[in-house]
Image (cartoon, rainbow over all chains, first blue to last red; front, side, top):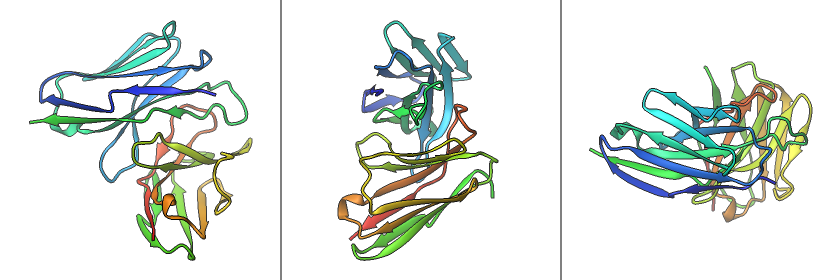
Length: 116
Length: 112
């Protein structure tokens, strides 16, 4: 099955700095890579995703890059703000798989702390 | 109500109790999921209900029993739990095989 590794487990930055979270995956058949943000007391919320037919996607201050050859993808947050503080999860899945294998496999999460 | 709702938000139960967690989605989705979230561990998929199939994680103990009476409601029945079952239990929904999963706020379960 799929295995997703996520680093770092904790990331502390100053407001205005950039933050980068990296994930690697093992199954070359994976074709969908979402990122979730989980704030205290809430469930994870999808913030951006990328499919395997593109290498980069941007949405305002956040961007995701995908390197299929190396089987890794990254989340980039620019001009960080205190409200960006949360736990971020990456995930990978194969939407064409059967038997429940299309369900995303999640990384362990990165706790991002943005200091004012 | 919009999105995915879960009740109760917090639950404390003894090891001999029986309780149920409830999830309701208002998004018109037709797949629903139960996840367990423990500290420092990846999200652990427990059960999936969809039009095509029911999927179970074989490592989930039988003291957890899911029920999905229709596409909008999902229950997790709990009995004779252990302290290590204390965790945040998350419900999610999606449109069959589309990519996005929408999560509820979770039920914080403490087993004493």
